[in-house]
Amino acid sequence: MKGVFDLRTPRDLFAKVEYDFERVQADPLDPFAAYDFFVTAWHLVEWKHPPATDGVARAALLNRSPVLRVCEHLAVGAKHFEPDPSRHSSVTDTESAGVWAAGAWAPGAWAPNTWAGGLVVHLDGAARAAFGDKVTVQQLAQLVIDAWRREF
Image 1 (cartoon, rainbow, N blue to C red):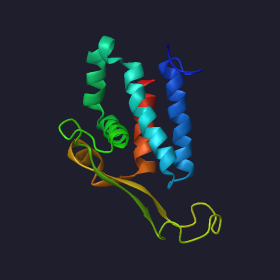
Image 2 (cartoon, rainbow, N blue to C red; image 1 turned 135 degrees about the vertical axis):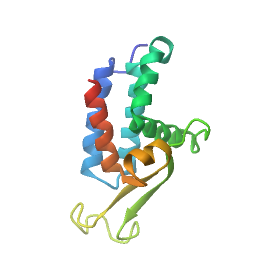
Image 3 (tube, rainbow, N blue to C red; image 1 turned 90 degrees about the horizontal axis):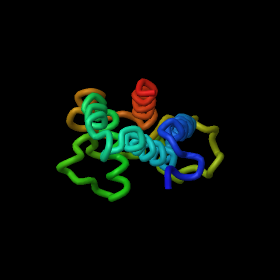
């Protein structure tokens, strides 16, 4: 099997990353959109530079792009609930930060994005040096999409 459904090339998967990016930008509190975005953005590394055939280019990409290492940490951490600490040192925590506690208002009581808030990623290591202590998922997603656009 090569790909899945109509997703067969790295460019096809990049189109999905862009689609998921729009979802993240539209709803800063949607953990499903954030999960989809970071998992797809990470797996695009493997589609573009398969480890078995293009490991040198893959390593070079990851060495020059701490934001893609953050994607890996988030994707692997979410999949396994706890990433391997010896391989992943970009993220210390994630949180949903908002003015009101989740469920404080009935759905639709306020227009979208009326109250500030969003998903936040706390960084460590090279990611922290590059981007600061913490970033919103929207900010991080912008950095990721920018990095991938430079690759394509």
